[in-house]
Length: 194
DNA sequence: GGAGTGATGACA
DNA sequence: GTCATCACTCCA
Image: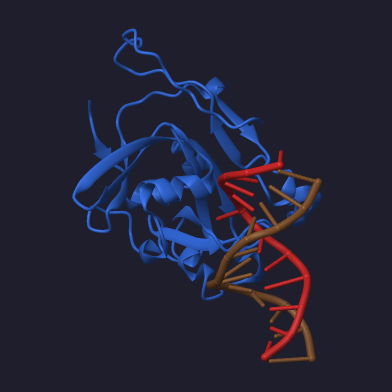
């Protein structure tokens, strides 16, 4: 199995490309000397100033400033008084965009994901790297196009009929591994209802 | 369907 | 300084 760490160039691609390409990649977390990896199954794109669903649409603020920086950095924010959300900054410096990682295999929901992986605001603004203890790897998993569903994003109806209905959410429905069929092992697919 | 929770940003 | 809002989760 190849393990290829995704570099800055990957995250500098257009936000929608990154959001879609992240499905099937592995989110790797090192904490307290232990490393875990989970396949990403759900993402959402937040793309530029004009995106009314994005934190950046009213311009730069202390909270969202990392979105204006280089791709491949971590944007974590706290919401609803209890949940951290994990985003990965995309695009080039100066263009505010990010991908929200909503779910990984076995863990649905962005708040539950950050809780399970011990992700909090201390990671905010850091680059994805071994040093920060959080990065993304391509482990050779192949995802067929037809198995990635596109839907409107969750929880941003305030963005209005146009931006609220943009299909900027990518959800994985099935996985094919490049080294053969599942050798008898039962695949556990957890997926939130659509 | 509704409570809980507190940082954030808009406004004054 | 106040206040409404929120890229959510859990329990009913």
